[in-house]
Length: 147
Image 1: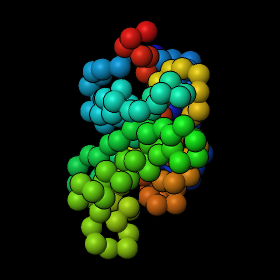
Image 2: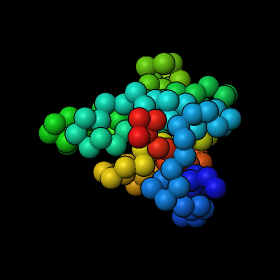
Image 3: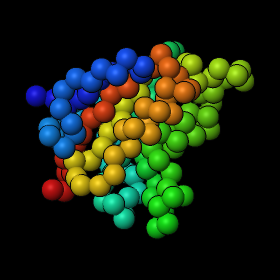
């Protein structure tokens, strides 16, 4: 059984279990966007919470952008994964010079390590609901490959 929870922003529906309930092995699964999010999460900088996470975004033209959390000892300047992914999208040329560039985001995957610690699900959903309300958001959990 998978641990993906899928919902369309705005409808509040969620399917499946939580990342903690059904952690999967990290890679590969055949789901390219999920695998990209998990790969970025494994490279994330989370020395304080020890819970790596990342967001992968797919645009309507098929391009993907992803980045992981970057923690700070002061916590409040921590770069959350959805913000890091949006920065990667902008820096990587995915943001067209129009006001509604984020509307090109069609799908997002938040990968969170199955460990105790903060979840970025609520923040990810809130940011994407404001910027890309038609985007589909999935949350996936993964087990650390190191145990």
